Length: 157
Image 1: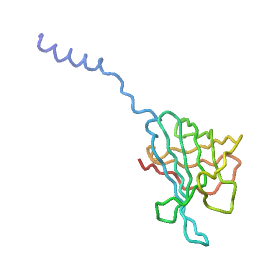
Image 2 (image 1 turned 30 degrees about the horizontal axis):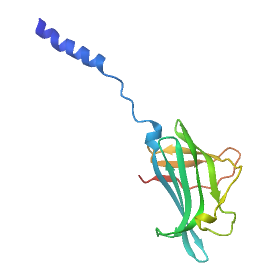
Image 3 (image 1 turned 90 degrees about the vertical axis):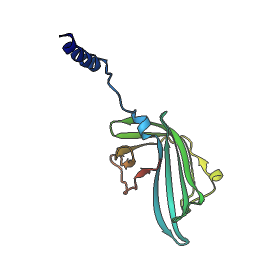
Image 4 (image 1 turned 180 degrees about the vertical axis):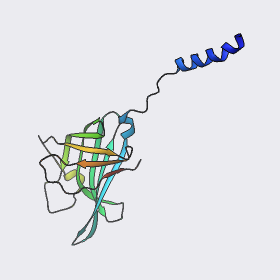
């Protein structure tokens, strides 16, 4: 009789000693570098407008928007760079810019990073849908806004 109770007791102990194992936090799942690229045609040739978004697990981010020749890696210049914090709720990440440097010209596609101007007093918040198991972020157009179709950010690492 004792030998028959031992397996039953062992099973009961295993069941009650197991803890619920939580999966990784949303911040650790979203952590990484995301890239969105749009190719444009100019009078001087084709250019790639590259936007990067680096999300860290501590809830901060850093982003750069720069320009290259189409299909090339060499950076010709920058359009903007910024940093801030983010929060994740359900399947949406909200970015809140804290510090932003931008071009003050609208008729050029890039300039040296050192020539970008600090944007003062303009807090900016944007929402992105988290898609494909944290491998893609798609801009969510705010209500009452006119938005063009945007290229999603794709996680590269």
